[in-house]
Image (tube, rainbow, N blue to C red):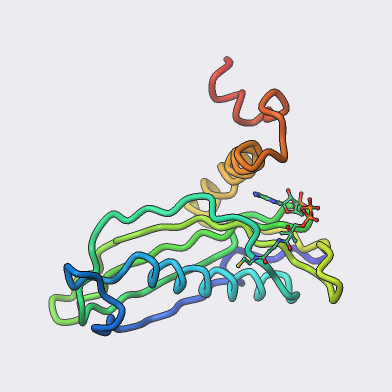
Length: 170
Ligand SMILES: CC(C)(COP(=O)(O)OP(=O)(O)OC[C@H]1O[C@@H](n2cnc3c(N)ncnc32)[C@H](O)[C@@H]1OP(=O)(O)O)[C@@H](O)C(=O)NCCC(=O)NCCS
């Protein structure tokens, strides 16, 4: 299977925050943002493997900065690493202000998607070639995150999480 760059899966979604998407503080409701991030990540995953994909895990989401009603929200998703049948997708979110010409990072999310066949069975996917420094950093850390997610979901025994153990044992 021919490896693909992270850039190959780049998916950008731009939206304006409407009143029915906000919370009582008139900022974008967290659940609305999660749905947008999941959509964006699923498109990036599909672009990488050219298969149907399912969300296996949401490994991390941070809400660092509120996005107000009327704000322009930009989501960028890329596959940071592919394993056998699963892949990590990193989603970066910004509040874009074309009037002030500012782009404020607001959120990030890290997802695991699995490619599946017509019977919903996991299938092999191409490897990822990271190119930029950031892509390389995320690629390397993705293995630790996969182990952590597997430990937390009860799919891997803590003593078998070798990459995580390396962080604590010199
Ligand atoms: C995700 C799913 C296809 C995995 O199927 P499975 O039979 O458990 O398959 P496996 O155990 O072989 O796991 C497949 C891959 O997913 C990875 N995986 C599974 N659960 C994971 C988790 N919680 N975190 C990280 N990776 C996970 C496995 O490590 C494996 O990766 P690899 O092949 O790259 O090494 C299956 O659980 C499923 O269909 N879940 C429902 C998905 C869904 O409906 N999502 C939408 C939610 S609304």
